[in-house]
Image (cartoon, rainbow over all chains, first blue to last red; front, side, top):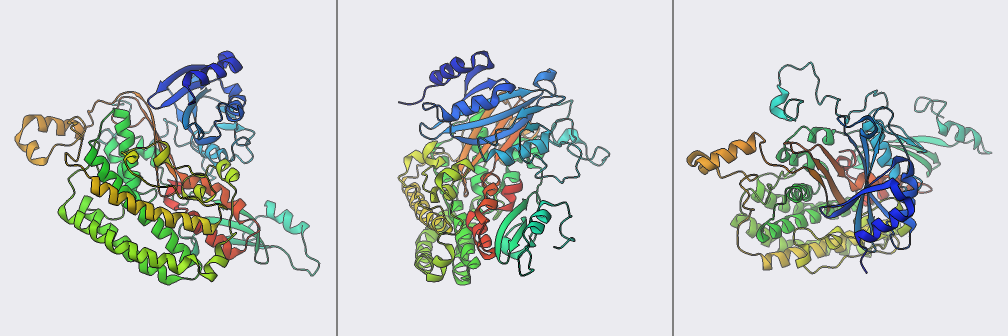
Length: 173
Length: 411
């Protein structure tokens, strides 16, 4: 029997009550939001429950929403995949914009190690409990987090190129 | 130990101090890379060596990081394809098509059957070149240069086919939203037929050269083996995972571009070692050839692109001669296309595994966020563990059998 969305939702709500919310089917992926403080129990539950069996972490990445209220300025997005039933699941966790911090899942999924380092590198999200949280793609001396929306794409002193004609600026976004 | 290479506070320094041998010899530190001819790309590994055996490794990546995700947030959708080319540059058409399919999913564009089949053909050609390079380079690293030189001419033949389809060879920037920019020419099909005739002969010979070759077997069996559980924990996908015995293939799990219309098997290995990875890739080349033949035989007539004037550039003559086309042309080029707000995840089976695109759109001409799930980046984490206890020369063989492509690793 295929794993139904309703079944996933019922099990999660039964176990975590109001910490899991905003369930909806987004195109081909079932999506939900989770409170930041229960992310590790939720992921462990999804992985170890004999019916859910989301045993594969496909992807982990960050998103910056500077226009949201302070508590929801960063999102960490987990894509889980159950290969037995072939079901994908997307989990979004919104965290604080000034001091982004979330528990690491690198002890649950080995592959999360570098994905979390990448997210830290680009967004400055502190993954608590990560064994080696340092920059991975950028150089260690860098002081900014370049994927944050306020980080300019190019040298702002440049005058030979008008950014309006090359994509997003505050006025055309 | 060499203090030029490592600071005295480095964790290796402590290990070396604690493990002095009785005869006075000590563990040594070896800097492999970043630019080393045997690593086929820019990877640095600082190795802790006991003689010729590797005790520990510290990988550094990011030497060709080009901030594709940041650039993508500032480019209209059709200008992002050239970025995807440069990820796994051994199989750029797969990246291109994966990206187009992601946007089409986000915009809800239905692609006609003919375009889907043509995409399958070009993606399987790309898979063949990808595996061809990986396996023949693995041969070079074990000392057999001939096989590489022999099959490499067929990559050239495939590039000629790409050239007929889109005009480019390595970084193809192929296709458009909704299909292809032009129908495939007679020459393209002729070259494809020639390739399908000549290549299997050469590939058979290539296989024969290696499969039961004593030297090759000695160098690869039980080298860099990984168990299925470990491989899944490390996020392996693609041939490297299948070599460990897990039959996960995105083409089967979530068929895209009409893959469900074709008959093919997913080859799996058992031990997940270098030899199995080689054999799985070999077998996949045969499956790809079979898929191309099936697609050619079943290739339907019809349009080569979807009828979506909002997104698909009109022919240039029409732009000059009809008002609607001029308006659409203007709107597309100036980025005034209707884009729904939402999130999309689409994955394709790339040369190295699940190549995923996570796209967030906010209604403007550029992605709000685009994340590439690069298979290389994720499974290269396991490299340290795979080479612990191996010989230095094995580390090179393991690296090339994993087919780590620096462009995809760093994005």
